Image (cartoon, rainbow, N blue to C red; front, side):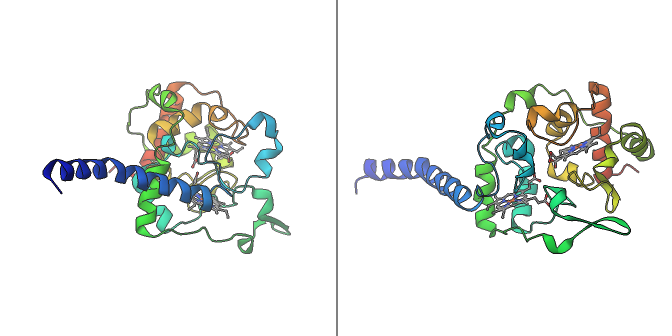
Length: 231
Ligand code: HEC
Ligand code: HEC
């Protein structure tokens, strides 16, 4: 091999190896994940509102605008439940004399990936970013809030605790737990979804609370404070 040839090969390899790895992880996600998760935006209008109740898993088609990559890579290796009552609570809740109870036997374990697969799948998922502009339009800057104030606001004043937990076993179960939100989610995503949940998911069961930027930012600061308590 002459020198020019080997330089060309090295260059081609450097350019192509990441593309090949990307294509491979895209195939893997299509084969192993897309049966439950949307990896392309569904045609919500054509599917009708029944789409939400038939959902097997949360949407992943905007994963790159939503998750923190470090969290994603770790979670894919050791997945733990995020929604106490699953994606469609009605499928996991049994009525009892003491009120509705979550039936642990109704859940199946989430597939876990090897460290290598988790890394490449994370890299692929982080490229799914259809809402970059919406994220860029967010003005949230992390700030401090007293935990007690934040808690009253989240509960009594804004009613978020009707559906979300702000501590293990504290709060509602129909939405994702939020005491881990700061670790899982990009701050601008949280601000955007609290301000306008329907923009992210046309069939979400989270109502729009009609909050202004200041109110939204206070709530995100509370989610931050839950993860990183101030002294
Ligand atoms: C049998 C259906 C099923 C398959 C297959 C599946 N998932 Fe999931 N996934 C779920 C469910 C259900 C949840 C919700 C878990 C929870 O919130 O407690 C979930 C949650 C997730 C989450 C967190 C999403 C969020 O918004 O909180 C990620 C990320 C994820 N899955 C990635 C994957 C990847 C990557 C694959 C393929 C390697 C995969 N899943 C395969 C059912 C599935
Ligand atoms: C009626 C129930 C309900 C109420 C009230 C509600 N949410 Fe939600 N929220 C949800 C559900 C359910 C989701 C996930 C989207 C879905 O499955 O439709 C969600 C998603 C979120 C997310 C994204 C979390 C993730 O992991 O995807 C954040 C952040 C959030 N809500 C914050 C709030 C805040 C702050 C309030 C109070 C202003 C609030 N929510 C009020 C049900 C609710």
